Image 1 (cartoon, one colour):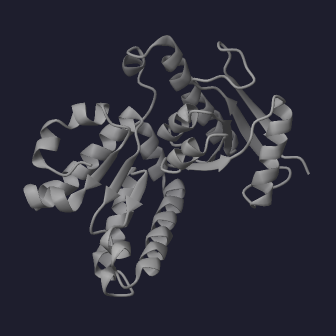
Image 2: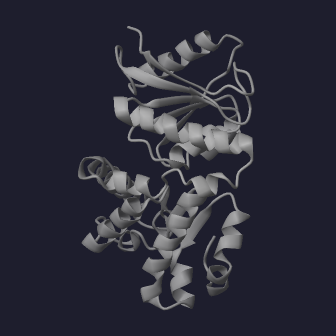
Image 3: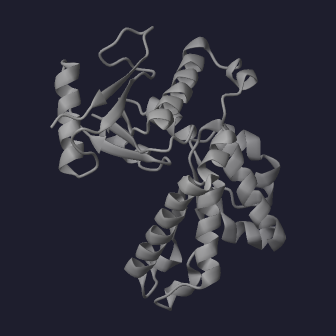
Length: 269
């Protein structure tokens, strides 16, 4: 939780040691000049994006809805800015903790965030976000061989998905590859199947990731077909559509350690 002036002085070391960050704008605004808070919000989001760590923007997003059933136009714009800047999540606090319109506040935030995100694909804003996380060979050289390969694979899996217009399906036990794919901001959704409920909850925070629980069998094709059945049952994909299946990450599933696979498969009727 980035909330104090001291935290800004030590921002990089704090974020390096953290799993993610929350921009606590109310607390930051109490310790720093208010005009600095939007600048710091963008800076923290950018650093987290480059580090591949989720970032939440919080505090005062729909403050007026603690007492009123509709937001101000400035509050709507505030949510839009956070989404456009690349935050993984936006967060309510007092609006749902003790506000008179808790559910309505959540509905407003969801509607605004989804509408802005949908508009970004057609306006090119998602492409601008993606440019900020293009594969940096200098950064890549700092990783161990295995991690560098995973980053490279996630980047090119994203390019493939964007080129042919398919969602990504990934099977993961630790969540590593799903998080990496999120870092490169594919146009389509990332359907991340995991047999670990803790990983499923954690992945829900990452941009573009739809995490689902599924027991894995020893048969890759059988597990894959069950996963497609789950997605079809939820109306997330349809027969005849293509999906890009990613098999990679820190813990191998149905593959050798040295092999990273991506397959483009049609959804059966």
